[in-house]
Picture 1 (cartoon, helix red, strand yellow):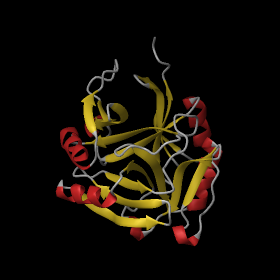
Picture 2: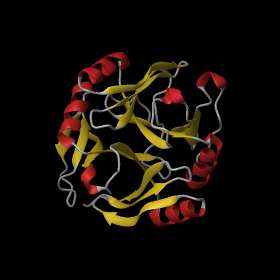
Picture 3: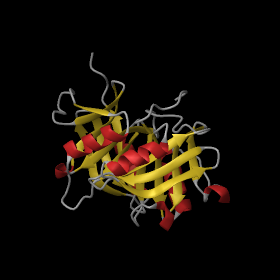
Picture 4: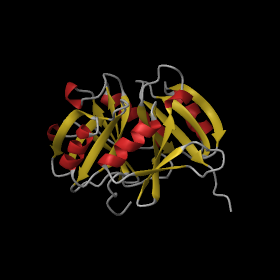
Length: 259
């Protein structure tokens, strides 16, 4: 990624955990990331890199995070005016979980909950644009909102950012909803009813891997739990994992494009 992310586009992913160093070690071994606990002026926030480019953040859980008291990955959507987006979000029924804050000269961030209960981050970039590598092994490749009310969620996000939604045209994915920015698909949305009862509304991160089965085996060996074992679906082969501290994420080997 060599240009800024357009507003509304998922631009970053960040993990909040109880044991930051343990998480850094786990994802280093699993995906090949490099990262270390950051300086005090950033609250120790760690920016993990792959091939020298930023791919994800890992931070220690604090009351100020505004997130539930459990390890979780948070998707960040790009915005060019954080204050205006926050104002629109509250007017549309969202809730501010972490108020806007400056992150040195990197940019400004906040966390909100949409009206269906899913937490999502907002990022207004300055010197830091977001993920520098995507769609490669060990890097972010997809962000998906899982919600009990797809129409309500679509209305909310379209009212706070230049996002539109459309039904997927991918064979085998009928009923799936895509988020688009300027006509380009940037994420997706699915009905929570397809998941086990009790699953909360949330944004799910998908990481690209060369072999789902091999990564699942390595993750289990490192203490992760398998929530959905490898299976084939319309977009490719995927699995859902919980890291040793409980942070849930998906991995996928995308299907080859059909000619």
